[in-house]
Length: 607
Image 1 (cartoon, rainbow, N blue to C red):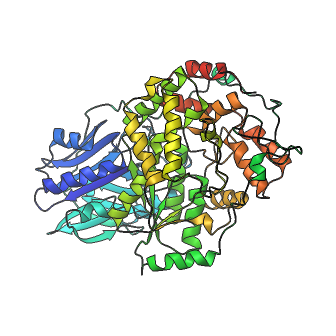
Image 2 (spheres, one colour):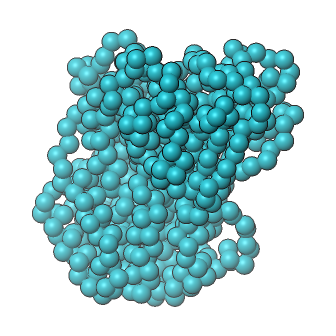
Image 3 (cartoon, one colour):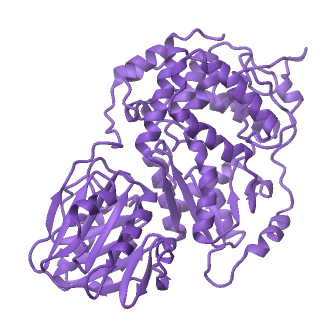
């Protein structure tokens, strides 16, 4: 996914405005970049594996009157870059085409590169070769493609630039007759564009100078960082992952929590203290209360009125479904990509937003830096394995909460609606640090200064055992936790405070209606787009004999949603090591799979 932008001027482009567009596009990712500009009556494409502003500095297209560009977060492809040039067509694409394999089967064009955007160019070529008109090309593309499709299609032979989108992640504006476009409205408002309009379903045609000769293509530098690992199955490596479904751990007679759960105790009936102290969490308030709360935020016509933090997981996807179809709100989705969102997660974001026609704004972290931080913390953990320190590996994602405020300012919308599952309480993650469970806490995430200070004190003591934790990631970790647990939140509501969470209904709704993809390495649907989950759950299971699935299923038992017998059956499958997810994680961090798994397997068991 990327930020695309462009300027079509009567004379030469406005350098200041172009640089502002380029700078804002970087919010969506800086893994690679691309430009096309008119140079001496020829269109020239430059692509690079670097920052868009650096590429602009090299190319200097400021004497041109047509300049289009993008800044990209690598998704659904390895090293191939945008814009895609094919048969003298050029395509910039923000989104992911999730059904490209099926489309290619019915095209006469040959797939040449490893990026989903190529199929958009191929559909257009197929359309033109069969006598189709430029006015109909976007209909053909949008009818065939699933997922988010927000594009700039350049057809130099006939002198046309076509802007089109199925989800509204594309805006145009003008200044003194010059035309600008960008993936977000905020980018155009920043330098006072006039007549700003959203491109959604109806295409926007722009006249550009014609060119009969081929587009000139230059790749200035090869993409080296943040490449999505190419997976090659290795049976011997998979066999390294230990799994013993009959580990004979004593479990609670009511739920399925094992004796290795921190601070667990059993009464004379074998019932654990987590069951005895449990208060029903999935007990929603009247839905009408939520309707009353959001009423002041509603806006007239097509104007957007709420932000939905959106991970692509099952709960945020189901929440988006409810917000649109039941609440009747007009949302914009926001995704924070910190480098551990897998292609599966990104495709599900694309599927949902494409199907519902919902704009998706991405804020991408410095992916290279985030992954280096994770690697440093994992290396520190390997030197002194400690179950209570596993949370350090996921600390980088907490800026999700920070950037909600960024998006609120940019889009001018206050209301944000979250889809946090009330049953996702995992006391053991802090329990292994020596922190007793607070059975009175009614939130999924622990809040409050006293609790946080106690947590940080316990964690600091554990960090002293492996000084490698004291690295440059500490500020990122602490500031992220501030935004999650300390910062007071406004205009902020949880959907499942008012809607009952039902797993079967959630899964059936998103899979049947929105082509939501499941993982190929697990039967679970929870956290399958999270690149970290397979690894940390493998560590917990190998050392303590259980994972977060055990705690989740135990909560369902207490809520009356699941029998103990069925819960035991389900965790036998869900706790199996996710070889592909674990391989992706370690390959992405550039760590030796055998070395890391050998360390995990050698940790003394708690049972």
